[in-house]
Amino acid sequence: MVRNGFTLIELIIVLSLISLIGASLSPFVTRTLSDVNLSTSSQNVVTILRKAQTYAMDNKGNTVWGVCTTAGQIYLFQTTCSAENYRETLILPPIITLTGLTTTTFSAYRGEPATPTTITLSIGATSRTITVNDVGAVFLDSL
Image: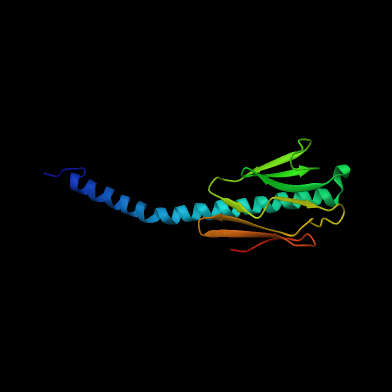
């Protein structure tokens, strides 16, 4: 007599193999997601820095443009960081640690920062560095 279907032992073996494969892949998936978060956040910080610099170089609104950080959020601001007349907000994922950025303003027409800045974004032991040099060039290190 021929029976169709699976035995309980076959089912347990298949589920055990699937669980083993899933458990062995989870560190790679976690690492990849962390790398993607860090890379995307770094690019977003570079974008907001360059936007502030472009607005300053265009002398948009005939005022100061800059980037600041407060309570884990990064702001593109006009005039001062606390001014509410114009402000764009970049919210970083909570797993990312940001250091090196307080307030950076750019000069009108030339786009030079008031002071050169080095910004570090990190997740655990992995980090990315963004540098704004004294002539206004914005660099993001490569992975």
